[in-house]
Length: 279
Image (cartoon, rainbow, N blue to C red; front, side):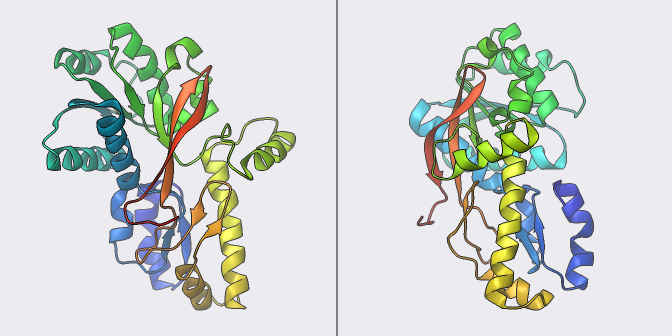
């Protein structure tokens, strides 16, 4: 399952059946469920949000950070991570929520602007963040913008005028415009087959197949328990999205990129690793 809510809905059944599963939901709480059969193949929003905050504080010099976020479980969890991270550093934080499907977020954006923020985090699903990017300009917000991973995807950026999206920062596990070894070969093959750029979901689940293949080969078996044990011992498996190493809680991804949008495309400007992780 991809959505965090779907992972929550099925994880007990899969645990009871003792079958390992590779999930894409990024809600921080998923790997706190104590389910030894759950392995996450996308980065936790806890990691993404901490990296976003660290960049805004260290590289941008922000002192009063605003956030506009979807009020569903996924983005609310991300907001809570940001709030806790900034609170621990005594940085002022202001936030405004909206609902999935909303078309007008100018009221929330105006409140954030009038509160005097000096950087804005945008966290939401693809359709809404494309709208928010346009409305940021309409409201006249001119502070640095740090967005969730959707801003690294052409499915979002194609909905926004390049002049509007220019300069937006995003924390993402994948962009097809990365020059990292192996990525352009994957992008070329994907474009030839599907006549479009791969997005982070394409990369994540492409890597998933090779993660499973690696586990089966190391286990020497397709027995579910043997596969689970092998997945838990995964170490430094190179994929197109990330290098995968299993943590004690089933996290496979420990690195992300800060990207900047230029000419409607997201380019990597800095690779960031999880604290304590040695690549």
